[in-house]
Image (cartoon, each protein chain N blue to C red):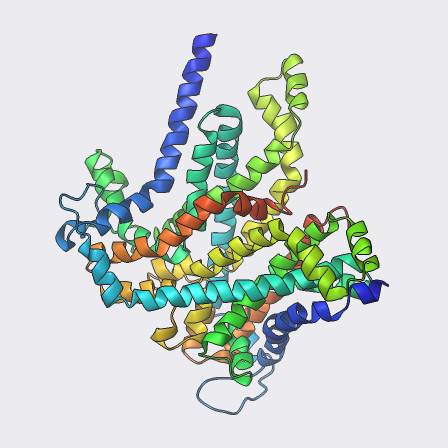
Length: 290
Length: 274
């Protein structure tokens, strides 16, 4: 009866699309990573580990792009988590009436197109005419004004800042939902026992939010490793190549027709993320997957 | 004691207001500057426009070929979401109801896609082999495929909550698998499908990497890519860029305000278990 009522061909459409456009390219990636596939010749030759040597070898800047990606990822995870936690607590414990309004506004950046957000920030962060520097100078804080996206030391922090601005509301919303599942009785009992706001947070909220924090961290991690839009629009990897990340370099290599190297980079990223993905799925199905 | 509480409440309110202001500032900036003339908008200042230049919107629609881009985005978002969520619902329903060893493996394989990065380079090869590169059908199919992992994940969990007795009753009444799904199960899945659809539509509206790789004809570009290209041409004219940006984010903001409940439900699914 089961096979009749729940026919396998219902699965085929989704499975076929997924296999053809996700799994097949990923598997092909393993093969093409070891070739000199490029746009200049129709022949594809086996070159063994040449692409990997190029990427991991000394004298090349690929490791720098990978480390840029890691720096971006770690910084955005920490900033988004800490700020989002502060905001989530503010909206759940600090405010009563306007909490919902603020939540709607704070989440807004997360639904806006990253491309558009980045364009606007390109203007805001303009060293000479941008709103940020104008406001800083106007309020006597001119010494804080920087050449944000143009300065080699400030470009990455600026990109991280914009991305945090955009993504923090999303993490906050998840944390709020998590905080709301904690029974009020715990806090009441703690307060009867004399616990203050700080120890309530430290002893009740934080431990009970750990599973949620694990998920948000992994979500931020998956996002950070794949970052493209914000870097592409704000700096396009510059100044020099100070803000290039794995995905912007893959696009760059692709544009130059160096498909082999681009595929090898993609495949390295794939391997890392598939391992992370396994943990995400375990987290999301924590009552099912043993 | 009471005073202390009031002061603390005031501080919290001020803090929240400051953060909300920061979050809204860029949207405010594009709105006010989209209505200024070229000279006054050049620094994207926070001042209000003296004269409202509504004609900026007319100019960008004409110069930026926005109408075409708007309908392209609409087509990609709606067509891909219709295909993607329906196929995902069909698959999730069978995978969730009939949990054989094979079906469980297929389910986990599919939701691995949530984490899996796209290999754009080899995907080009697939697009060439299937003759889908630089076609609108191709981009729709790609977007549909890209939604499948997350939509299957959402729908699978939802199907679990639907009582099996319904299926059994329908079968006894003589429903075949198609009737059972489309008349009984599919309507009951509306909440989760709306959530998936809203998230997918927003995602497609905001995305531009796939068209950047796989659509070389500007006539096929979606809003995002058209805006980016427009920015390249009119960088000096922030009033026009702002007007362009306002038109791009307007549908997103409207959908967000109308469908908040569904967006929040989808975004927090899986992350929080009550």
